[in-house]
Amino acid sequence: MPAPKPSSEARRRADARPAAHGKAAPFEASQTHAALGEADRLLRRLEWTVLRRLDGLLEGDYRTLFRGQGLDLADLREYQFHDDVRYIDWNVTARIQVPHVREFQQDRDINVWFLLDLSGSVHFGAGEFSKRDLLIAFVALMARLLTRHGNRVGAIVCGQAVDTVIPARGGRAQVLQLVHRLLARAVPAAVSAGGPGGTDLAQLFHRAGHLMRRRSLVFVVSDFIAAPGWTEPLGRLVQRHEVLAVRLTDPLEAALPDLGLVMFEDAETGEQQLVDTHDAAFRRRFEQAARDREARLRLAFGDAGVDVLELATDEDLVAAVRRFVELRRLRSRLAAGGGAVSARPAAALTSTTPL
Image (cartoon, rainbow, N blue to C red; front, side, top):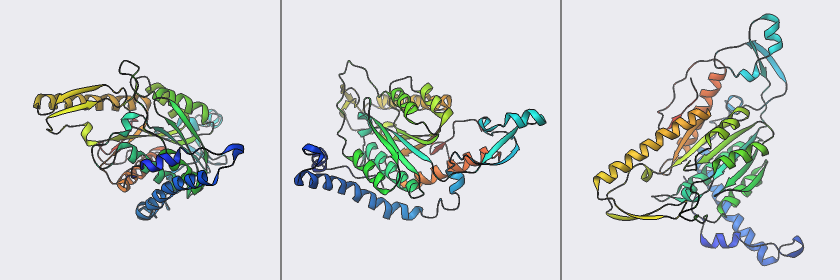
C-alpha cells in the first residue's frame, strides 16, 4: 500500500539543524532520531506487508531480471533479431562474415538510480493517497528489494529544478536515509502564474547523464506533467543505461465526477479557475483532453525508446511490482532472441520499443 503522508510534526523535526562544530545538541539529535523513526516505521511496514508477499518472486530469476554489466566474457554466439547491437563482436564478425554477439558473466552487483519528480503536481491525490505517497512507497519497496541482493541505490530529485542528489550506496541504512529525505521534503511553492510552467525533466535527465558514470538500472518516477523538451535527453539516457519510466497517475486526472462548481488550481503555477463540473459537455472535453495527453505521452515514450510502468494511486503495490517483473522477463527473453512474449494490457504495462 502507498506510504502514509508525513505529519507536520515530522516535517518540523526534519528541519532541525546540527549544532556548531558538526555535533548535534541532545535536543536536536532526538529530533533527527524521531524523523528517521518515521522512515523506519514506513520501511518496516513495507517489509512486513509487501516484501513478505514478494519473497521468492525474484530468487530464481534474479540473474535474468537484473543484469549487471559484467566484465568477464562468458561466450560468443550468433547474432539474433532483437539482440543489443552494442554487444556485437566486430572482430569475430569480420573474420567469419557472420554477426556474433558477446555474452558476459552477469554481475549481481549493479547500480540503481531513482530519478524522482517531486514537483507540485505529484502532490495531487483525489483519494486517501497522493501520487507523492505512491512515489515514496514504490521507491522504498524497490530500493529495499534491490539492496537485499547487494546492489547500490541512489537518487536524483527535482522539484521545479534538480535540488537533491543522494549518492548510490548499499544496505538498509541507505534505503532508510533515502526514505527519510523524501518524507522530509516540503511541498514545493508554485511559480507565478505568468512564469514558466511545468517541471523541467530535461534538466533532470541532463544532470543524471553527467552523474551516472557506470551503466545503471534507472527508474524515472514522475507523472510527466512537465515542460516540453524532455524526450531527447531521456533517449540519450536510454542509449547508455537501462531505463524504465514509472508514470504516476490518479483516476481523477482522466475523468471528472459531477461535483458542481469547483475551484481548480494548477499545482505547478498556482493559477486558479472556477469550473462547473455539472456541465456534461465540459466533462467530455476534459476526458478528451486527458486522452489526447495520454496519446502524446505514449508517442513521446516511443520516441525515447523507453518502457513504461503505470502506477495509479488506487492500485495495490504488489500488483505493480509483479508487472515490473513481467516486463523484465519480457525484455530478457527479447534480448536472448526469444521473440515476442505476451504481456498484460497496455493500460497496466507498456512496451514502447518495437517487438
